[in-house]
Image 1: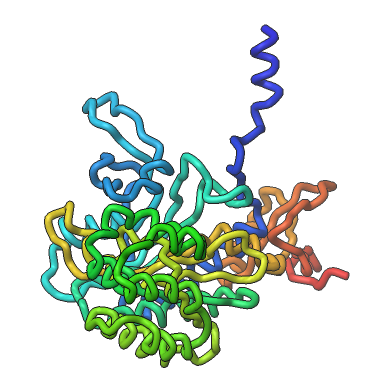
Image 2: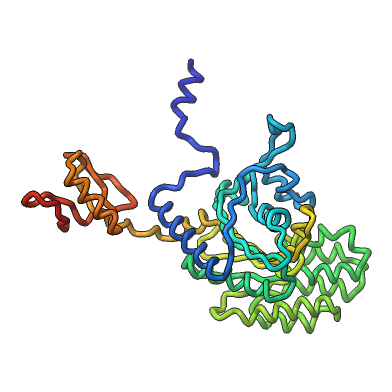
Length: 391
């Protein structure tokens, strides 16, 4: 009995880092969702809605240990196979492109939905992000990367986030350096970790005895951070290598897209290096405890679905973004009586048909709303229902 009472008493509680979205935040979130999907539609992106649950082999890549740890799995009672709640929608969209649509040309897709993480990315982040994003499949050229980066910048501007910064990198630079030093291949994971942590001492220890140009190049990456001038410095200090030159050429072309000065180039920012194959970018803004958007090129993502098409895209967490914003002002509404009078019902219907929000309230009751504010009321005057401004 005591246990039952405790369970009943705490029935309103939610798990750690799980929360409801209340009316005004929900209104802001929905306005962003609708607006962003409209932006993506203007670029020709088609909306898809993947399921919340799939078989694990569709959602998980063996190489992505981080995604595997964040994914909740269980045995399906109907099939005996292992199911998972999606921790990222990107693999699902790749499956749709590769297997269901099966188009030969360029495909542009966008999406929106909840994902769930077994463990949060940080102490202040939700385990249930609301993910929105866009993906381009079927084009390996820089044009696709430029379009995705342009669309990401348009998304961030639409959200009106404070003090934006987008860090841009390229997976090809470090891969080219390590490919020219076979002795370092068995330490590649530790080298990536040292680069991400900008740990020069660890990097020197890991690369001791390797080719001097490669070692100097890896160490130089730690200081290659800043505006577009970083790319010129990179050409001067990194070893001569056609793959590195190609990567820097691609980044230089993308730098020309930056009209508002938000792009920063960080050649040691290797978040997601396991699956990225080219340009990578991560967006930050004032007040956010972690990145608010991530993306880049991942040409191998469709491989396990039988079609490794060229692919590039990004995603944002709208839940986290709305928590950084001032919520939308309450929507203006009309307060009306709530009874079965036929003339009243007709008047309310006419107002709603005209696009007005009408909230009916029982006689003598207070109106408690967060998302709406009644600045007018519907009153009966000489047997006619009419709208009057409230003081």
